[in-house]
Length: 177
Image (cartoon, rainbow, N blue to C red; front, side, top):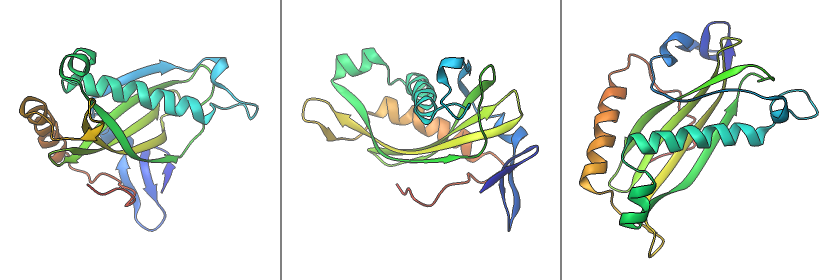
């Protein structure tokens, strides 16, 4: 997959899979202007900052689903990352602003699958995608356990909204529920 002009996700054989404007309707979970300190010797944002920005937006997504610090402490429950798949499409440089948007793809009683899109608002290009498989976990026994009903209902509401989108998520194929 590649990025071309106003196309968010483009593939040589299939053309534009997801126009950038369609990514813009996804919920915004973080926006940040990139400081010089995020750059590496190549003059673009270092990969560790991609992960930091993805991480910040994921925590904001979790909070929107009821998975906040109070929940983790009070219930002794949490979330663990099981798999990550990252695709980089375009450089991000200092003073450019990125927007982080998430699409929830599905869930089981314990696991959830989503994509996090990093859009460079300065260049109008998709910079990167993080695809994630995570699990709900009991922090006392450090094992995956079913999400409580109130949390799973919130996930289901967002999944239903995201399933109404008129474009297929450009999943890698590396992650399955």
